[in-house]
Image 1 (cartoon, rainbow, N blue to C red):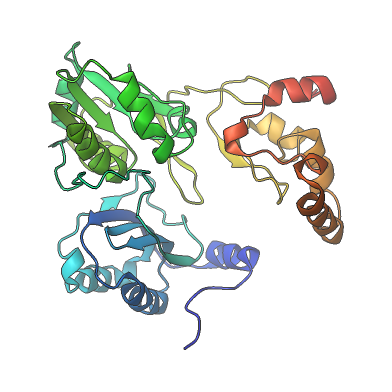
Image 2 (cartoon, rainbow, N blue to C red):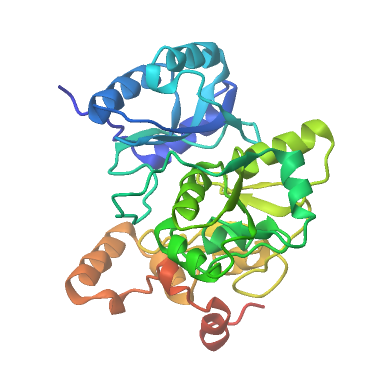
Length: 354
């Protein structure tokens, strides 16, 4: 049987998406459910959704599904009906993006994983089904007014940097796996307090709330549907948005604006900015915040070294990558999120932005 993956060049796919004239919905959904044959289900979904030109990033595991997708409007009813006919996903709730233009993914990727959210939990007695209390936007806003509550952002540092609820504890972590023990340590001794947690679409909080209860916290609550659903309810019901700034999303948009507040700054010059980009050096792709002026001066790159590398012919870049693999990371200016380079200092010492 042919390998059910998309091998086309990403630049070709992105251009095709840009030129297409069909209307799309950007949605996300998840469900923790016991799936007996995740690989078989994965292949069935890939074949069906490919025929409808659905795009997205979907993870399937024995514990459930986590999906972010772009679905053609003309196939939306079929898409919903199809999922409802699969027992695992019947009546699964969808979160619709605030920015609904659908230009969020350019291909379909479905992967079978050990877990739909890597959590690092190995405790055999942990039951992820024993979750905390769901709160809608009205209930969450009301709970935020209580000065005795503790608000926890269950997202990564680069997500909370551009948007968050006022007063939230924002762990300095790159992954959910890293974050869980950091939050438990931070809340130690406060097991009797009311805990409010939130994340992008709800899936991380779903598991985290159950884990916090497992660890002895008595009053654990989480925002139903995450920031995506919260923003929708705020808009529809005319509520005050207590979430400020940009909601980081894991697709081509990178972020969708919730309020006009800009909470962060350009990592290169310090100007107010909340636009995340990936370094244009294909062998770096550091995720960082870059204003329009720095994007022009630095040609979309994070450091002077990456500007030089990105300007080389592609064959020269490939040679350097081979050299990096053979000789170690010191031969290229490649930074990963966990290293968090001080870009302002690097540019100050090596390159002047006028």
